[in-house]
Amino acid sequence: MAAIPIKIVSPPATEIRRVVGEWTGDRNGPTLIVVGSIHGNEPSGRLALARASEFVDRKAGELKGRVLFLTGNVRASTLGVRFVDTDLNRHWTRENILRNSAASAESHASEDQEQSELLQSIGESLRTAVDEIFVLDLHSTSAGGAPFATVGDTMRNRRFAMKFPVTLLLGIEEQLEGTLLEFLNNEGAVTLGFEAGQHDDPASADNHEALVMLALVYSGVLEKADLPDFEVLAKRLRSAMPRHQIIEVRHREAITAGQGFEMRPGFANFDPVRKGQILASDLSGDIASPETGIIMMPLYQKKGEDGFFIARKVAPFWLHLSALLRRFDAARLMHLLPGVSEVPGHPEQLRVDTRIARFFPLQIFHLLGFRRLRWSNEFLLVSRRRFDTVSPFAAKGH
Ligand SMILES: [Zn+2]
Image (cartoon, rainbow, N blue to C red; front, side, top):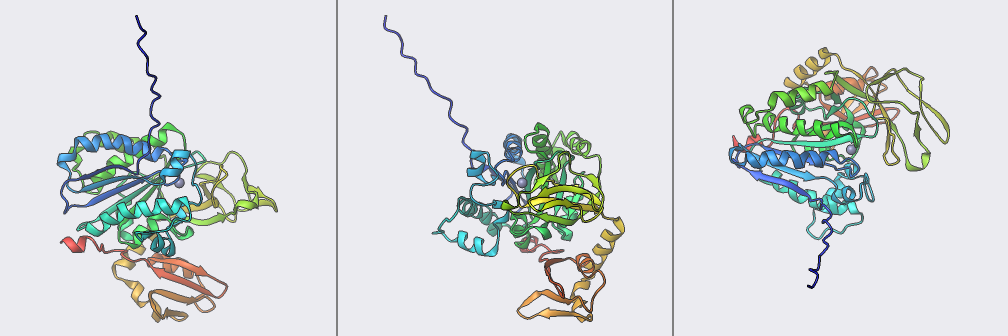
């Protein structure tokens, strides 16, 4: 008897897709977009999206809006590296976006191609939205420590973020140029970043999954009653975070590839540090903390432009005060102050002469919802965040 030939089929390599899932219930309702793994060495985001997709599939008939789950950097995720040619989460500058929006965009880097594809998917959602758009960006860190959310400081972002039982880190968007969420903020979306824990810790994917599930409810795409595990998921996030506080970035240690930056071992997110404490070293010697506070995102991997951040707690008083000032739109009066002038051709910008307006100029403009653009010896240039209190999308539909 002839032997039956056995065909050996190797299992197909799991293909990482750009669109993890896309669902439309009520097309006039809100939109929730979640991007996972915009850094390819942070798998927990896309793993969580794959899991959450199964749930959304089952609820597809009950959606009061639209849901879009995307892999951020497909090519880098396939290789398991942060990026292929350049950091995709520092790539959303006006110049790159213009170039990569064109139908015949020419790719200079792998991340140009990634950006073109993301712009297509997200752009379609932005163009067709008639209600609020919420965007989550899922990250993890090389260091351990409790998870936290990162919030670009607009009132709309704050309001959304404060629904989640998580620690909020304000002000990071001012330190980083070209992030996806800063671009989408300026397009009018409500955004929230989330650092779920260490890159390969299974708990990071659990935390991301819980966040995404809660976001389905907090964005208004599902009712709380549609999510039977609501309390369990909220508890999971809450218990991953011993501290439910609001903190702000005070310092970013900017580094370059050739600098030989190396963190001292043993630091985790939220560890307290003192002014002058040695945190890292590079080719020119020791690097000390410029102030007392807590360390965030110490870098324990080769790729990255941020060595560490120093943050500190924000007293609730300042949050209330800034909410009040923004409600009264105090920003529109600021150009009347001595040392403050408008910038011709840029109605959203103000130039502050810091020889005249000397005391805490940046803090004051932060309270009013401005973002720092540049700070030289004599001048501070700040820009008002667009859509701080009012949504461009909700206005279209209602
Ligand atoms: Zn990341």
